[in-house]
Image 1: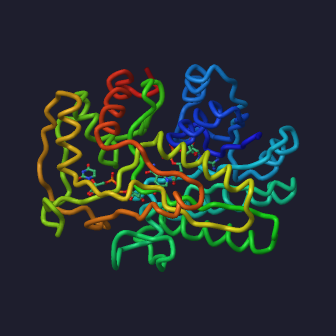
Image 2: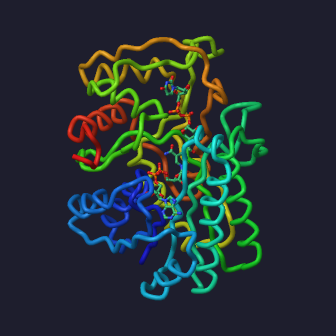
Length: 338
Ligand code: NAD
Ligand code: WQD
């Protein structure tokens, strides 16, 4: 298949590109590099020995997006492009609504014009809001979301669902990721935050490399196993495999399905710190701080629908996640900037 990856140069997009190229698909990316580097795609080519057709465009520009559809025979799209920093979305909500919602609408318009009927969307467990019970299952009520970023995901799910209802031939999977971490085992691609990381794993790895002096643990008074926040971390290579499986399912089925991609198991902040220290051999100094605004105590999903629908389950555990994060960080202390 010829598969368009919006946001294909990003963290999850680049890993999915590897997976799709290795499965024999052709990959076309549309990215404005607002949070990524073209270097990631060169590394994808190095890992796979295959070519990526890369377009430098803002996908909210529907005319330019349509040019891609006019030149490439696109069979399916995977929609990664979006802004994703939760705190930034609270400070600058209009930028988030404009970019993330316009991007989704623009892509659907181009797909409609060119008769492309298969879409995989990067949604997030954040659409569930604060849990009434765990694990999260796809049939649970959604929202209210705790920040504008989360609302853009919930609203994009709605937009895609309404569009699909207008076209009985359309097929979409809304993949609700839990906490993606890790990197490709080659150490050539990984997560490359532009500023001080907001997320736990990149923060830990920058402490390990000496770029940051210690981890701030946001709260140890949650009703969890050790008082620190519990999350369903999922290795990005497992996640990439999930996209491939979802695309294959999409080719055979119509309609919209929301599907969790997680391991189903939650680990605490301190468990991740200990695992990282054990696999890297480096002590991770940390300090307990107050809770971070908007955080929930625990989040983990039931991943059984992905297994039932398209035979996917996560195979990698916390040791793999920490080992591969560290391998990427130590080989690329400044990310793609060398
Ligand atoms: P990322 O920032 O690394 O990748 C997103 C890519 O989209 C970047 O390359 C960026 O340059 C590009 N982009 C953004 N706006 C664009 C636009 N208007 N036009 C063209 N390109 C644009 O993020 P990621 O971690 O790879 O996440 C991919 C998707 O998965 C995002 O939609 C994100 O919201 C979603 N998601 C991520 C996580 C996570 O924790 N990483 C969790 C759940 C969902
Ligand atoms: C994990 C745990 C923190 C940093 C976010 C988004 C979510 C999704 C994934 C896109 C929590 C603790 C963290 C630190 C810490 N993204 N922590 N010190 O908040 O679960 O999810 O990324 O959809 O929408 O909200 O991930 O990695 O930030 O935090 O103690 O410096 O680590 O409190 O318990 P989160 P995270």
